[in-house]
Length: 355
Image 1 (tube, rainbow, N blue to C red):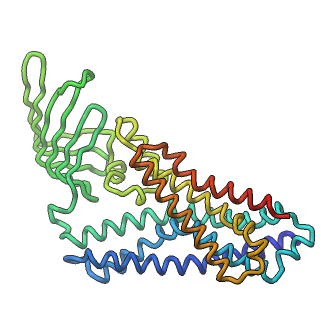
Image 2: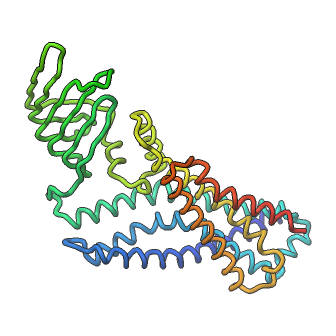
Image 3: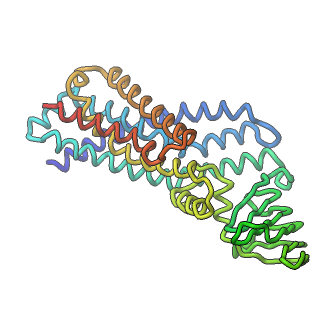
């Protein structure tokens, strides 16, 4: 009997959440489409804008799943409570803790779905969408396709004329420093790139080495260098944090820290993503706590309003704290987990008030 009730609750919650998520994604996709219409140029026109908005939907779904889970759970469980089905379950001997466990199973399913979207579906499609938009705005062979950048690899600083998805960098400057942080050499290559083995190929290299007894100039038509910075790390540097998988974020954060570079933006994204994924598990339990009492006899409109208010408060609070943490250099772990901990506290208090 318990298994049947658990499946019934799960089906109700997941169905309601799916419908809410479809509505939210339709609105978010429309806003994304309208915003992108202002940036149309060259080959980036309405069909490409539609494709871009569609490819962004998985990442948007990841961001909206906690809110959709809360609203969907409130609507689904509220409908059951309105028909006294929750009361019948309790009368049959199911405690609040037991009901919470059944509802948490639905949250666990949504947590797995959220994790899969946030790790394997959303980031790759988001990265592809941004690359597609850039290539549509500029001709593929246009020199503007790519941005100049600085890269640090231990004692070596590299200045690349351009960085693009093809890993063809144009001219490159290399500045090597010794253990005393003194400039050891300066080199320039007329053309550069990374091959399939992650070796740096430098063409027409001219290097000036500074020695105690003078200056030495070395020239080479083709030089092969091996740096810690490979195509994966450069790809991460090209991407926005939300376009990286959790594994990509961890690898890039490790690289930044080992080179004494600021990793706060990527750390914040990693913990933000982790807290948001776990919050999906909390939302159905919170909804169960709120469907008792006044919400049991209220209509769907009242439950929807409660869900929207709590969901918006969570979304705005988490976004504000995450951005404030980066601005004021606050601990990303505490800042990004604070909204989820607050929801846990509210849920526990609400469950304890149920008799």
